[in-house]
Image (cartoon, rainbow, N blue to C red; front, side, top):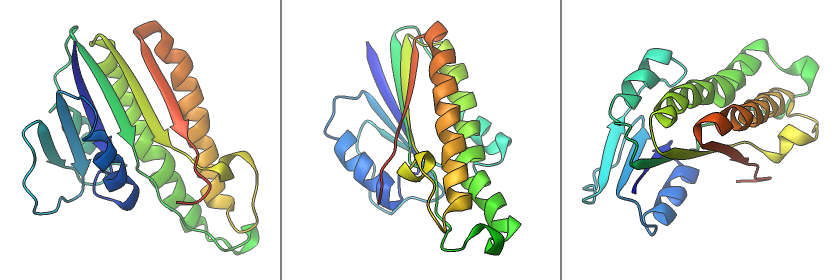
Amino acid sequence: MIKEILVFGSHGALGSGVVEKIKLADFDKLWLFDSHHDGAMPVQNEERVVVADLSLEKNVVDAFKHITPAKDKFIYLFSTIGGYLGGKEIDETPIEDLDKMLTLNLKTNFNILREFKKLAAESAGSSAIFTSAMTAFAGETGKSAYGASKAALSYLVETAAQEGRRINMSVNAIAPFIL
């Protein structure tokens, strides 16, 4: 069985750590997606793909065009895409901050998940991991926009996990407290 893994946000702080550990695993191909990559040469089984704004559906569709599904291929995905804005209470939080958090933490991952599910349906099986946050499960002062966006992502992951059963796709999220 061929095993390929896609890492979105591969060049960020969390993404680089994830990639470092994944390189120790037994994957036939490692796909690294980010808005930029460092100058280091990719290893033999590694493909680097530069992607622009993942909140735009077209950019995510174009990114996934690089991956070929197959019935003898198991495809994994790890999305480290997300960000944090906080420190203000609800009545002090500009609506633009809420929009930014929903776009960065939910919309980007929704787009990734939608395309991944299509790929998974045409493959032997798949597994995806997204990065939520503990804040998604318990309100915290000064984190309303961030927490709401991560809670929405966690809901999306739970829904995708149920939908994925029909196509041999598992979907989970990690929820760190502090990165």
